[in-house]
Length: 134
Image 1 (cartoon, helix red, strand yellow):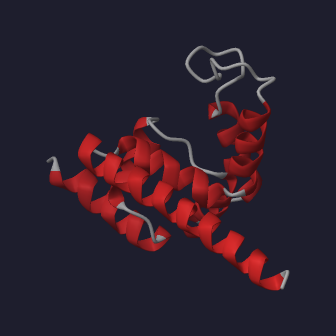
Image 2: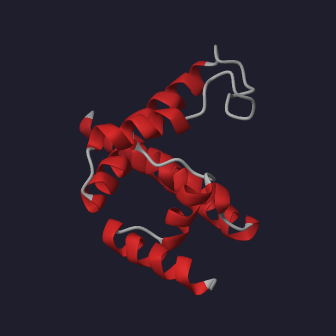
């Protein structure tokens, strides 16, 4: 019996071009799909997009719900910039959520990789600006 949900989750995941674990998190409420994903679900299930978008609106956490609001000071300018970036880049938001779910060792590896990549980018950017100024 346990195989049946996995098979249907895998079928949907294949149709949606996503991991089965992502479908599972949507089904269990551990994750909420983006609006773009809801639109893709509507196309796959051939239902009105507006219906699923309204359903998503009911599932989205409200700002006053505990556990969903930031504990940091919202006056922090860096947090405002990060929130804006996450709103503009849903793929980045999804990637960070996936990072959050990883095992600690794997998570630490990717955090180190991202941090190192940004440092390298800064170093090369400074070199390029120096060469332009000559």
